[in-house]
Image (cartoon, rainbow, N blue to C red):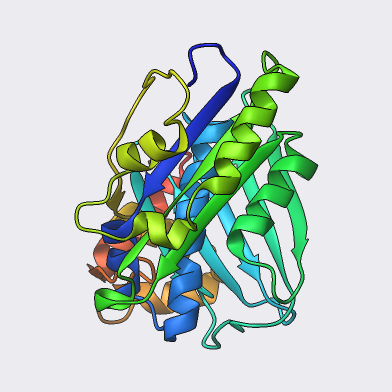
Length: 277
């Protein structure tokens, strides 16, 4: 944040995190880059709005196919291509950006903005911040193709705070207008979020308030797998309990689980008795 309290900046470099997701997901080159950008956008949204809560972003095409990005407070992030469906997602054309997170009062916040064909993720996120969060901001993020589906992905958000004067707003506007494109700013070895912030706030005295690491990871577990199974019709569950071990693969992280019929039966019985795992 600038020491005068005029601006807050959040910067993210999520290259390794995105590569972890792209190693699992069936995505074309262009779609993989959009997923990497969406994962970066999810981190920015969470840090800007509710950093202690999970943020989920969906990038939906006209048919309803969606890229999904989850950002958790512990720094774990994941991305998926149309989970639960065999079809992929259109990389071009009109889309919508849907943002969800739990507000401090326990209610679910959900905001949706249109993404006309030709608009990039930066424009979509900036539009969401303005329309749904009433946050005046400037956003720049991008993903560049390379090894593992993405050579580098990252970006920043500059948030205008109430203390900003017209003079300092004009100075920031001029400075941002003179910065190179975000793709150029991300080039170079060992490019970090701190380096992005140093460039964005170069003319302004500022202080670092917090930093955190990002990792590719998942929330899956045997308990979550069996909880999902118990949403199926009773006759299907009975058939599974009477059959062979179930092999289940997590769509998000690729982890393989083997669910034993006896474990599923015991878990069902515990849930039926009112025990919540």
